[in-house]
Every structure is written in C-alpha cells, then in structure tokens.
Length: 168
Image (cartoon, rainbow, N blue to C red; front, top):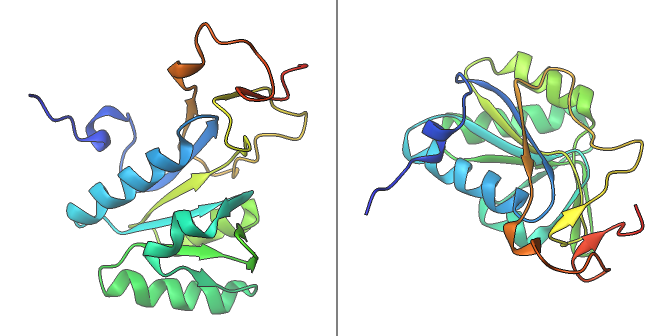
C-alpha cells in the first residue's frame, strides 16, 4: 500500500492560503491537511469564509473572536505552542461563522510562515453544488483553490438529496 501525503499532491508552496470550494469533501480535505501539516511541523490555521458546524472544528479548540486583534493574538499563541489554529468570529448553536476574506488576507500577511486552510464555499452537506453568483467567497490572496466534487454523485439524480441548488 502506498501512502500519499496530501501536501505532496497539492501544487502549493508553503506557506500561503489554500481555499477549498465545491461540495462533498471540503471539510475532510482541510481537516486532513491540518493534521498532516501539524505532524510535519507546518504552522496551520483553519477557518472558513462561510459557516462550519462546531462539531467539525471542536477538536481544535477554536478561537471565537469578533475582533481581529483579539483573534490574531489568540491564534499566535496557539501557533507558538504547535497547535492547529482554528478561528471563527462567532458561534450560534451548531454553526461557527468564519472570517471575512480581508481578515484572512491580513492574517496570512501577519503570519508569513503559516498556511491558512479555508473552506470557501458552503454546500449544505450535499455531494455537488451549483454556486450562486456571489460564491465562492475566496480571499484575494489565495495561492491555490481546490475544487471539490464528490464522485459518489456520479450517475445519481440531481435532486435535493444529492445537489445543492439542483435547479441550476
């Protein structure tokens, strides 16, 4: 069995901003990259420009801070201790709201040795999606955007169970 480290499969120089768009695996990809990055001693920050379920990020003990200065300071401490930094501006029930794209660009500039893993699209748990005209929400300084399409959607009817916005 050959094990491929995902960082080897993505043509991105460390560090930078990696944004995941599409449907059917964005969260799994950013979580795997975060774990592998930590194992290789890459400083990693995880966030979103939309929303994520809290249970998807609670293992990182996320920073919840609506002020850039407060959040950046807390993330800096996490990175210094070798932890994965996860930052969201708020939490309401089961959902965490991510950072504005401009904050992610500033965070990347303030942490030039760090990789930011950003879930830049929402798909409501579906396998495929059609984006709205305002999506995806990708930070301007993104170095690479990875489009996700779940292969389990192949040969499936494009209905509400499989697709986000199937009418499109």
